Length: 42
Figure 1: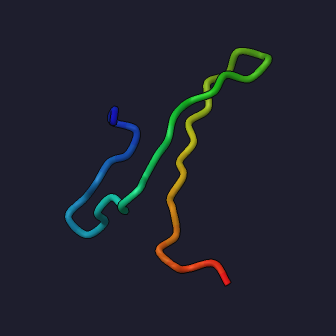
Figure 2: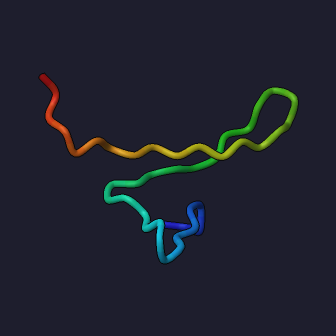
Figure 3: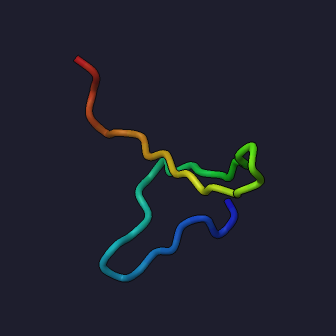
């Protein structure tokens, strides 16, 4: 994975983190992050 996320000693990167960028119609680049839940769906 690229350096989309920055870990610190008190804030580690969660498992199953994914992210990327998308570009809006007016050319702005936006970063997004997705983090899977560890809880089961009921």
